[in-house]
Structures are given as structure tokens and as C-alpha cells.
Image 1 (cartoon, rainbow, N blue to C red):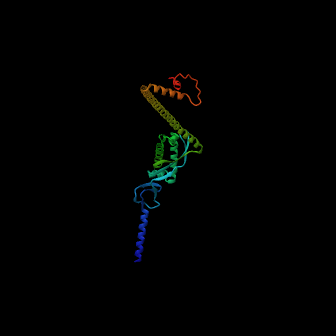
Image 2: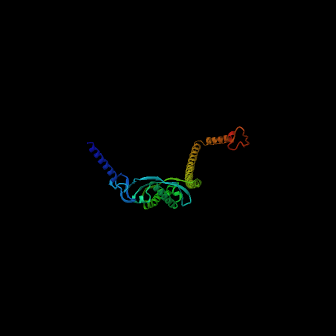
Image 3: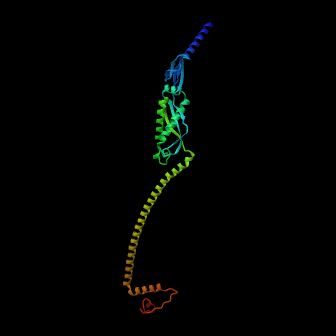
Length: 292
């Protein structure tokens, strides 16, 4: 009985070894190249169980075909207006052509080095067509970062797919900096740009202030003229009322009215320090002597 068990276990072991030698599995998100004596005989890109010849006849090479992320190096490049800038981008990529990737690179670290070189070349080519204000400006209409990123991505993607079988999913600017020597000149340029708007706003403010002052002066002159007219009318009405009152008083008692008027004139003519040389029989002093 024990001999039967031994044979049974030996058969199971042989089956396991055979299965391991003649089959392999592909996980989701991975691809496998079957290489026979160094030559690609098949590519398995769908998840599942596959058959192969045992080693050393067939060799399986596994590649991760999911999206990969990498940061490019810091590249110093020159803009169209001769300003040095330091640019870093990030790239999301994946293997699109497994055969080309295996024969041209076959290694993820090497792939990232080649992608970094392609991105650096594309940056130098694209940034040479744009001014610094396309990246940094107080005027949002001048900024063209999305357009710049799209052009760099297109140039990098063309070379990556054609040469290495790599598909660029995304390429974006991650960091933008300036060499120390250029920071002051850029600040001066930004100050000049802002000063242009300051001058414009000051001129507009002075223009509006002049309009407001002109309207206020015109309104003040109008109010003053209206007030003067009304004052003249009131003064004329007052004079008419006074004349009427005086006329009525004179009609009632002419002698008393004349006497009171002379008395008022006399009272307004003298004070405690006044010395008068007069003719007593002349108006209004004739009221003192009673000669009237």
C-alpha cells in the first residue's frame, strides 16, 4: 500500500513539474514575451493561462504595461526673448508596442532615461518659439502653458512611440524656476509690466477726477447763480415791502414820519465822542431847535 502512495505522489510531482514547465499565467495589466533561443515567438497580452516549452527552450519575459509615472530632470533652456529658465516636467507613460519596447530598450530604467532625453529635446525646440511672458505674466491672456505642454507632449510622444514603442499618456510642467542671475531682470520686467497698468489707472483716475470736478464746478455755479437770483428777488420784494410800509406810514402822519426819519438819521450820525458843527435850522438838526 505504501508503494502505491509513493507512486501516486511521484506522479503528482511529475504533473506539477510538467505544469510548471509547460504553462504560465499572465496577470491583468501585464504582458509576456515568449523568447525561444533569443528570438520572439509569441506575445501574450491578455490575462490567462498559456502554454510554452520548458526552459531552456522557451524563456518568458514579463513587462508591466500599466501606466508608469516619472519626473524628468531639470532642463535649462532658452526662451524666444533670450531668458534662461529651468523647467521640470512629469510624464505618465506605458508600453504600447511590447515587441518594439523589448528589442529597442527592454528595461524600465533605460526607458526613463530615453524619455528624459526626448522631453529635454522637445522642451528646447518648443520653448525657443515662446517668450517668457507665455509662462509667467500678470496678464492672464498672455499665458500659454497649456499650449506649450501640448506641443512638448506631441513631440515627445512621436519619438517615444516610433523609436521605443512607448505611449505618452500625459506630459505636464511640474516646476518652473529661473537661474539666480535672471531673477532680478525678470522682477524688473514684472515691475515694468505692472507700472504700465499703474500709469494707465492713474491717468484714468485723473481723467475721471477732472470730469467730476468739472461737473461739480458747473453744478456749484448753477446753484450760486440760482441763489443769487433768488436773493435778488427776495431783496427786491423786501424793498417793495419797505417802500409800501413807508408809504403807508407817511400817508397816515406825514409830520410824524418825517420827524422819526430825521431822528433816526441823527441817532445814526453821532455817538458819545462825536463833535458836530452844524446849522441848527438845517435838516435833520432842525428837530433839536424845533425850527421845523
